[in-house]
Amino acid sequence: MAEESRSLEYTPSWVVAVVCTIIVLLSLLAERGLHRLGKILKHKGQDALFEALQKLKEELMLLGFISLLLTVSQNFITRICIPSHLASYMLPCKLETTTSSASEHQHQAMNYGRRLLSTANSVQCALGKVPLLSLEALHHLHIFIFVLAVVHVIFCVSTMLLGGAKIRRWKPWEEEIRTTATHVHHHHHLRFEQRASGRWRRTWVVSWMISFFKQFYGSVTKSDYISLRTGFIRAHCPSNPGYDFHSYILRTLEIDFKRIVGISWYLWLFVVVFLLLNIEGWHTYFWLSFLPLVLLLLVGAKLEHVIIRLAEDFAQHKQGDNEAQAVEPSDRHFWFKKPKIVLYLIHFVLFQNAFEIGFFFWIWSTYGFHSCIMERLCYIIPRLIIGVVVQVLCSYSTLPLYALVTQMGSAFKEGIFKDHVHEMLGSWAGGSKKMTKESFENIRTEEQIPDADAGITASVVELSCIKRTQMSSP
Image (cartoon, rainbow, N blue to C red; front, side):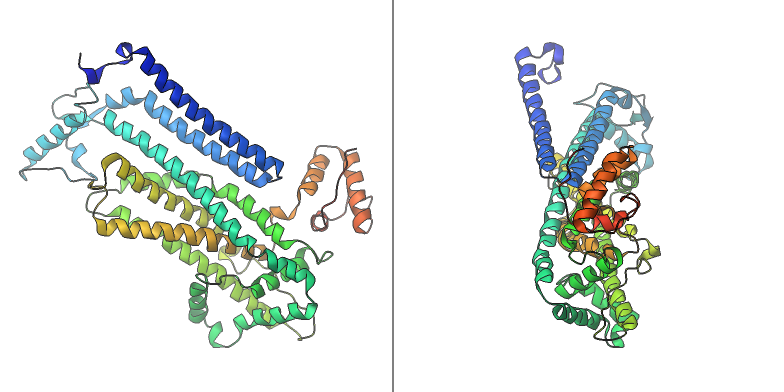
């Protein structure tokens, strides 16, 4: 029996034990690391990030199940034979042929399919047929799933870190608002109004050009932040001008992050379509790398254009310089009056970019840098540059811009409710009305909210805008 073809029956037991021990230890370390990270997030009150971590673990389990399914069904898959002429169509790499005749081409395709199985599979197909998929190809699919999972996790973490870092740079603006006089805010409102000043700025072409270039540098200014913050509080939290708008944005970013880390069915459909179109000579990998960049620039320009439209509405409805005015939130400036469409596009951009980079590292680790699938260097360098640009621009600029601008929709987002309000609503829904009444009464008394039937019919939106209070258990 050849050494390279020994089965587990003829493999030393100490080799099996050592390999299994290493695999189990690495798996346990990864599992306990994720569990420890979850406990830290729960201890710090980062419930949204904890749920995002759970979502990420679910996606990893799904990828693991796909890999396990491939392993279990590999014997069945490799025994499926197809005509050899079908195996010569839509190939990522061109088969080496010495003649252009049809019979010779068919012979080369048949030999090519059997060579793939010479070292990994003993299944033989009838004359003129080749296996549907070889064991070697199945092994490469396992590697692809693993690489895709690792790259997706790394990109998700970098997205949250860069997005959070950008939003935290707005924290001094929030603190400055609480310590400065009203006339300073009025000065920023005037500067915000200037974004729509001038007839030439209001033309469709010029306004979109300004929006396109604005996303690259200074996408959100202090005047933008103060003006949008004022409009949000006037619309949703008029009873509490000191509402912590910055913390609210961070909460909504964490909630949206739960949707970003998931891999929806339409994203898997994109993966299948991409693999289908990966044909020699089409350069699909190169052309599709521009798709996330184009979508990202379009989304960033749209968000900046929404700010300009809000500034136009503010300037149009302003009645006097000394009269208190605020930006009016509205959904009509977004695509189809649905701000969530922007989040779906950002989700697609981030996943597609992670898939592009993951596909590159998979080809590199599996087939080498000079593989025909990798293509020439002139195609590789632009793809890598585009991938890095998309990841940084989307995480550090577009995603924080989305978190701010979509607050100006007609409806408030889930993050407006703080944790203690969520607990009260959950207790109320669970039937614990006694605790709910006491909790509402405690908050109403401390924050001097008008009585409204013992607090039960008080507006939960108003309650979500008040300061956090310590709630004692009944």
